[in-house]
Image 1 (cartoon, one colour):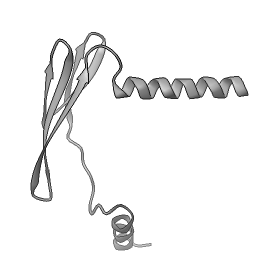
Image 2 (cartoon, rainbow, N blue to C red; image 1 turned 180 degrees about the vertical axis):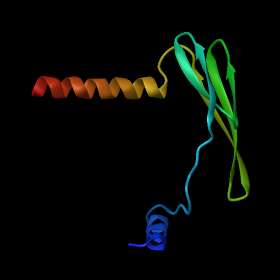
Image 3 (cartoon, rainbow, N blue to C red; image 1 turned 90 degrees about the vertical axis):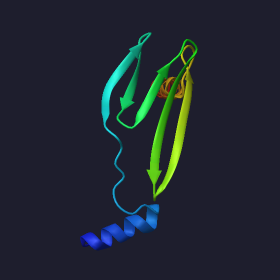
Image 4 (cartoon, rainbow, N blue to C red; image 1 turned 120 degrees about the vertical axis):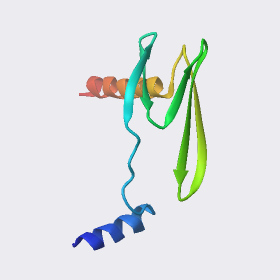
Length: 96
């Protein structure tokens, strides 16, 4: 399969034409033992009860503002996902 066919197949399967490139992490902030990547196209605000990330994205000529708000204390979505993975691994270990 030549390069053009691969590009066409990728587009038909994903509806994405071209590569998706994320912004570079310029540094990481540490707060209470938790690390937050800081991207060149985002602003991170650390509050007492929440961390807010504001990012402006340009997609096909349209500008979108994305705002993520996560609790400082408690469980973030990443914490929950890691707990789920650990639980599944423990179940597998007990069943073998």
